Every structure is written in structure tokens, then in C-alpha cells.
Image (cartoon, rainbow, N blue to C red; front, side, top):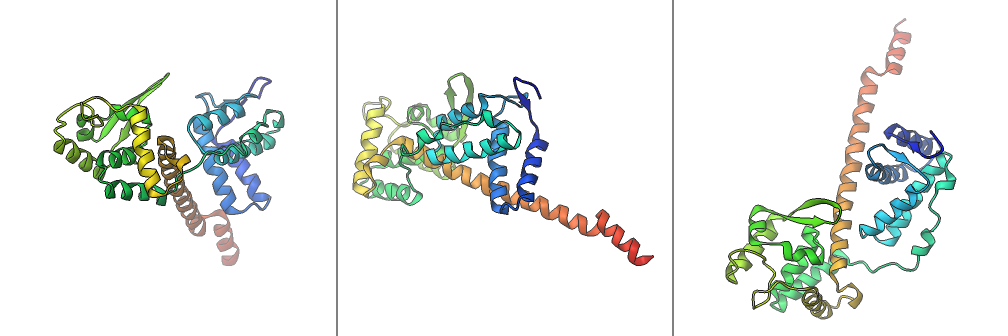
Length: 277
């Protein structure tokens, strides 16, 4: 530990979670904290040093990733509790109140499915595929132009990120089949799939307008009729599944250790020694 930063490791997080357990915190809360802290640990630079600016950087990162305000607030709160445990209350982020009341609307899974059903009923196949690509692949609106026939055949699309390495997004098999079928029926043999009748790439205004038309017909609130809400639904759905898997893995690991303790644990051996004496 020094005046400029504090180096942490997974043992640090385990010690904090053990502290929570000793203070009679609910098991579900401990598991929830573990998931948040593991994501925070992965967010840290390679040296795993936290400083007075880390909590604010963590909050801004979550905002930039498109997380809902309540998610940002909850995750910053978890980090603040860790900093308190480490004796660094002065490093806590204290401006989360600015996020309260400015919550952006979130599209629900049922509303998303209603959009797809409505697009089908209106015979708007291109809009149907745009909505599905944004939500199933996790594309941002400006990245739709990156989706080519070649990418779909390969099962992934490569998108560029500012000041970060390019990322590869997987295209689900069911969506692959729909996109290739659409391209074939519209004589799109190569290059971008989402194009106008004149063969030009769709721009933002085209995409927003098409989604808004379907949204209005589907009875989905107007403020949710945008690509960002579709992207956020992808993020939250994927993360929820990952979190559930992480909980199952941790529970399976704990059960394995408990079974080992029952058979060859030190207390078990002591018990046998005493009773056999």
C-alpha cells in the first residue's frame, strides 16, 4: 500500500466477501457482490492498482457501456463498500445521485418480441432483420453497415472500436439463415446486406424511422423506439445469462469442496481419531 494507490488481488476480494459472511449477510447478496467485484477486477489495469480516481472511472466505464442508471448506481455502491472495507472511504464515488431521475427507458423482452411479430405482420422483412440484428448480435446502429453477406456466411462480423482492438461479434445460426435467405431473394450476392432499393447503405435516419413505424404499430412506447434500447436489451440479457452461469459454477465448486471436507477434511479426520482411540 502507498499514498498513490492500493494493489489488490482476488484474495482481497475473498477476504471482503468473508467479512460479509461473518456479518450475517444473505448468501444471495454475497453472490451478487462477487459477480460485481469480479467484473470490477477484470476492468482494472494489469497492475490491479486502485487509486482515488478508480471509482469515478468505473462509473464512467459502466455509463459508456450503456448500462441502465440503476445498474450503474448499484455497481458503484458495491465498489464503495469495498473501499470502505479497505479503509479508503475518501476514494468512494459520491456523485451517483446525479444519475437518479435520469433513467433511460428499457425495452423488455416481451416488447422486443412484439416488435418482431408486428414487423412480420406488416411484411417489413428488412426492419424485422434490423431489429433482430441489433438485439441478437449486439450491434450499434452505425455498425449495421458492417454486416456483409460474407460476414454472415462466416458467422461473425468484425467491427472497429475507437482506441481499442477490433471486436468480433457472433451471428446466431438462426439469424444467419434468415439474413442469407433475405439476401438471396433480394439479389444481394455480396457486400452490405442492409441497403436501400438503390443499393446504398442505410443511414441512421432510415433505420430510426423504420423502427419507429413498427414501434408505433406494436404499441411499444415511443421513447423505446430506438436502436440504443435494442442494444441495451442485448447487453442486459447476455449479462444476466453470464451471471446465472457464474453463480452455478461457484455453487458447484462450493459443493465439491464441501464433499471433500466430509470425506478427507481435517475435522473429519480428528473426529475419527478421537472416536477410534
